[in-house]
Image (cartoon, rainbow, N blue to C red):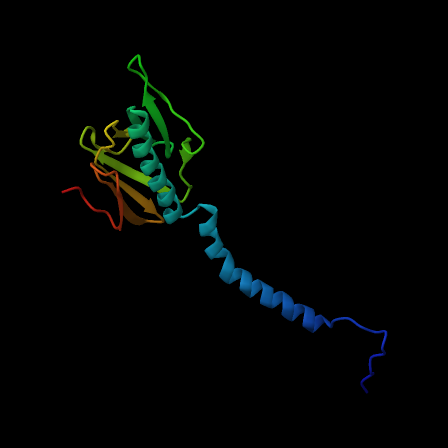
Length: 170
């Protein structure tokens, strides 16, 4: 025989609690992988940040009438900004928005191609930004989980173009 609950007896059965935990687990399995992209761990987020940095450097070089250089350390997977000082040396250049950036662990910068340096696959590679408001033409090849992507910087405008796949410079 089944007993009826008394008015003061309230609560959830073990089956009800297990069902709620199962539903929460399924939702977490669906939502968490998508939220990983919001934490800056994916290629699109890294490229958006790099695009903003390049546009800022172009504007900064023109407005301050200085030569700026975006340096990529291929061994440590970082990039940083430096400016040409009066004594002819490049010194670290930081502002509120321009600081050293470490690429996320899943993303790898494979090489940088510029007119001055050619194709650089190890060590340091540089993109220059001139006081006239021009950027050095450059192509960067990234990889995320074995998937290649190409990032191109136009020389006159400093505009960037993003393409899936590994595109060789013509």
